[in-house]
Image (cartoon, rainbow, N blue to C red; front, side, top):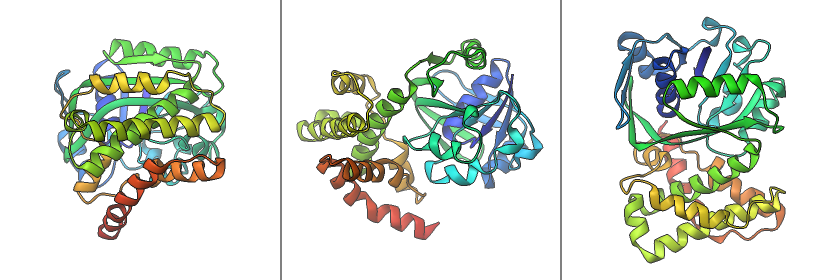
Length: 308
């Protein structure tokens, strides 16, 4: 199976390397110093699930790769439209463009540029960051993908990809309700990213504080309320189940939003809490905690853009 990883950063680099180790023909798309390191020294994965060092083809030009069976689309949400406009050389009949991003608008954005039949919803539960050119560090052991066709259908292309994931020791679930899964992940990431960035402490400290834990729960609840108002009909125990998941996450976990904030990188604030605010306003839903987190982090997002 030929796989192009569009955005071979933390998430893309980790899963791309695992898929290559499992037998996939993997090509990486990256840029800057990270790309140069991938070309000269390969990709290095530092992980409790096992370290990897692989020499894989790497480029910043999709046309160098050509038609692929699967595109793992892993760019930051603010780069979705620009990257989607560069997908065409990677497409052929049946190509699955699997989104492994933060947010709930990416699939529609991509489908506005390429035929919607190529677009597949995906969710990644993992904390992996580029800690140096060519180096991806994975925190904890959690590394799970949930994916599905947007219309809920079963397809041979996704079943084949799931088979490769299994061969690559990747925890993967194929679902008929990927849109709900996207909203679940959105609730998790808005709460986790918002709290770790605003508090500037890891999840263990947030869980240990009654006040911070209550705020985390409210952030989850607000996103679920917006999802329901959007017509998702989330299960009644969604908030409780997400809070149960929180208890299983490593105490030392932060988030990519916290990492970007503290390292002067562009932040996905608009795709996360900005989207919650916008949709809530359109739907008449009250989201005071999300608005508070947005207000706290907005100056950082602006400052980091100015530094870019």
